[in-house]
Image 1 (cartoon, rainbow, N blue to C red):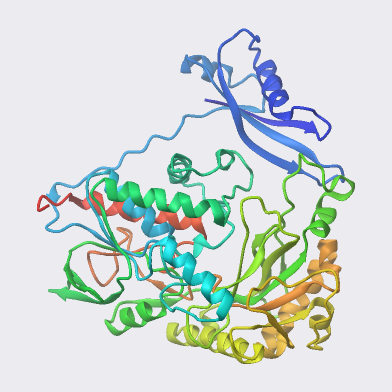
Image 2: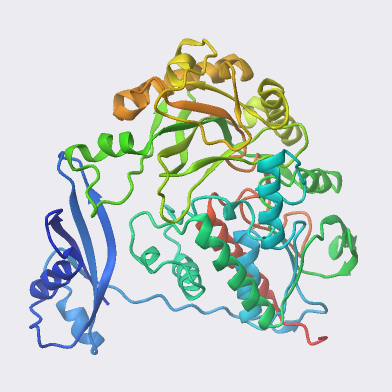
Length: 533
């Protein structure tokens, strides 16, 4: 496959995809009559010089791969690449029991998918319900404040990523990203995730994709048990021998633990069993809502609103006094702030958007980093810190899972006012005016104010005084890491594979899915499928 990069086209181009492919063929010296397979491999927008330009990478495949490598020198913009081929070796010793996967978020879902495709017939345990019941529980909570601690935005089929923007952006160059993308496309994800610079699915479409993947797992002999929580591990002779669950004991010698970043009871269980947990950096702050139109004016200037341009996105960061970093996280164009609590008496915010990203507001987490040094390297203290902030937000909101909020000018001045104008808050349980800085340790509140003010010097929309800040955001990532060795097994318990975001080895849908694949591949490399079933 040939990749022809840096084909730059103006917004005025009537059919930019066709023109990009025409220019790619011309650069390669391929006549119009020549039969080739071509398509868009990447699209980005360059707005650095004021007027946005569409920047395409075109993929072209010829019948003769040898001819492709010869054409790779046609221009500095042309390179030759092979589509990744995946091979997953299997060990010689059959498992006595089928492997168990705990958690059906992105990491567990893709671990189970790979195991099922390779004939291992995994047993998947998910503490929450299937998607239909989970969506109903979330909608009930948003409408009434009745929280189900096992069916919410954190727990249930698809994990926390189900109620998000469905972002697939990642900085990892792991070839397994292509495996994830191919599986998502096969199960109904939008075709443009294969070539958008910042691909996303949207929470509405992602739900159907997740259900379809789960059904493939089941069709290949895998089993998914919903409403089944892990309660303990059975250990014999220093090795994993089984799991205890709310539905009874299950023998197994291989367990992929993909419980997500909010499984605090599981973290306590692992600590009680003496397994090695360590503090991991995470971040806390609030959700900032601006008008999506103002974001796009800040990014695209006079071209804002042009139909060829994607919804405006941003990512900002600023190192502040004290050595901390304030940054934006999980930016959702045209989205809404969601109620992401999973424990009674705590308020947690997050953001999500549908595939169309058609809402009037943009939202992003504005957060400041913390790490083990803030908690004397005690994972339990880090979790207690998260919980304390969430309970303080609940109290400041006045109960019923209302969230504390204030407008940006008020936050910068420490006034605790919510003076609504153009931006209307989207948090579904309602908001209560509050000085958000008073809910955080003074150093963190000061860092967030310093960082937010710096963002205003980088992006004009952040100077809007009526932007709405809703708190608190505390679940950016897991506060703990379950240590594992080079074989991806727990350093203290052979047979246990700590996996994904909850174990501290991923951050986001794509990296969690890739880590699930890596853990499944490591498991398969040690053992053949069980012959018992």
